[in-house]
Image 1 (cartoon, rainbow, N blue to C red):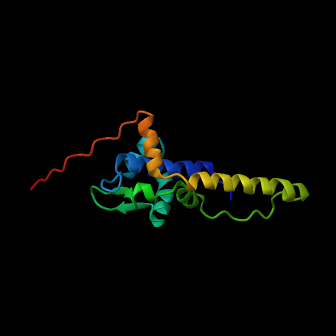
Image 2: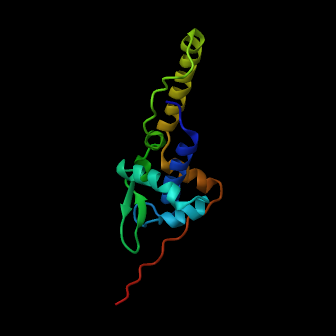
Image 3: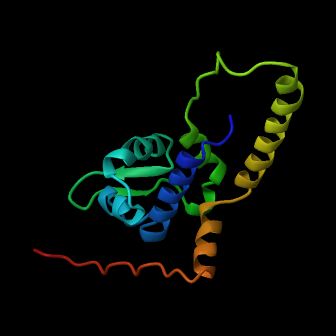
Length: 149
């Protein structure tokens, strides 16, 4: 299974956004996520649910609900995110065939996939947050806790 670039990039971006704006303590609403990413909230919901089922995100209900990281960011490998985003792809029954495909192209694809998975397995959300800081992006300050009676 080669990486489905659009879903994989979106899943990594979603988790990075949650880590950047909320982490494990604060929640990030789906509406805020959708606004920052320039996407329709409805279109992101299936991916948010898949990431939650996999334990990468935690869904919090209620008026201050939203999503937060399901585990510490240093423990979330990019390869895990891509696997969840890829989902199950049906086997192509009517795809191309032939000796060149079988002997040359498929082994090439396997090497590419193994190389890509190796890079993704060696990186975490924490690595991406450090890159965001090096690029000059400032994480928002946490809101002070206020109590109203």
